Amino acid sequence: MYGGLAAIWRENVNQYLSKGQTAFPLNGVSYINADGSHLIAPWLDKYGVETWIAQLIKVTVTPLLHILFGYGVALECHAQNIVLVHENGYPIKVLLKDLHDGVRYSPEHLTQQHLRPNFYSLPPAHAALNRGSFIETEDTDGIRDMTVACLFFVALSDIAIFMQTHHNYAEVAFWQQVADCVTDYQTSHPEHQIRFDLFDVFAEQTRIESLAKRRLFGDKAFPIKYINNPLFKSQG
Image (cartoon, rainbow, N blue to C red; front, side, top):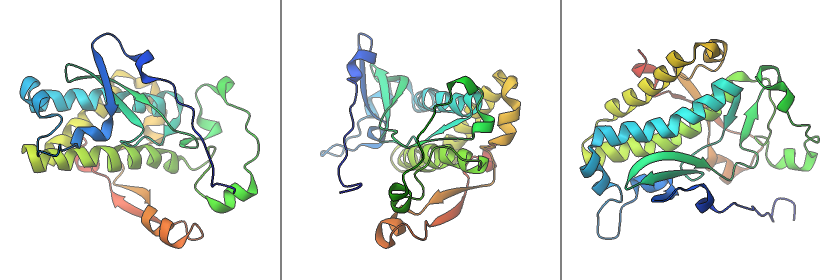
């Protein structure tokens, strides 16, 4: 039964919402209704495509950058475990859920050493079934890649393609807005320069896990591939 039975206790999202606010998973941004209409279409019309996308990127990317650069911690945040909070369709903030082992850091590079948890050793049976399930590592590129792969390659790429396909908003413009968001954060927080260099989110390539191969052929090979980073060509 190992790995076959699990449970997650979630907090009610409503306790984190102010009056007039609503929340839905980030992957709802690209949701198409049965009648062909788009969930976000009225909001794009109301606020303007560029303005709405800029705000979406700001509230989604900035907090995850701060966790990475300000604390030295990467989170496995893709569009299913990022909850977007909006007010009348305007993005306000995000909530994060269901991370379980989707946290990664190097003990040496944590900025708040006194908060480092004292974990039990990883059970051998768990490690044998899931070689990618670990929290502490000395691989700083791997820490960076968890953020870049999950947030940019998975979550935001889907939105970028959706916007270009259905709303005539070019992918290059989308990624430029993401790059500008990163640059704005870095300019505002020069105290984190060491970690800007250590976790270079503008690197030319990033590593991703080939989940389909892993599901089909098991965990022995732990298939990893390198892909081009969409932010590389958008950096200033």
